[in-house]
Length: 129
Ligand SMILES: [Zn+2]
Image (spheres, helix red, strand yellow):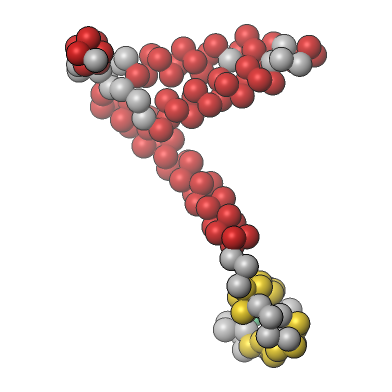
């Protein structure tokens, strides 16, 4: 692996944006398998080239800034998916929307009919948990 260290010396390397470009390229390649949209498999080479240019770039500051911009865009999206995944994993609770203000209220499951009090507007409503 010594040769790789020599080649990568002073170069930027892999970051989240490069990985995202690689993923886009793979997706385009897969989509391009279908005959009517085979142009995508040709387009897939663009993010692939960008990915390698970034990895071997010597302008580390510029690449770092690009990655930060990408993360500013990507992290809120990722967090939304994360929260949704965590919620669907939670089998011990149920979520109800307050009929008055629309706030999501989390209540324990399997307690039968319960009276839920909204923490925001204090509206009370009865639901089966
Ligand atoms: Zn409410």
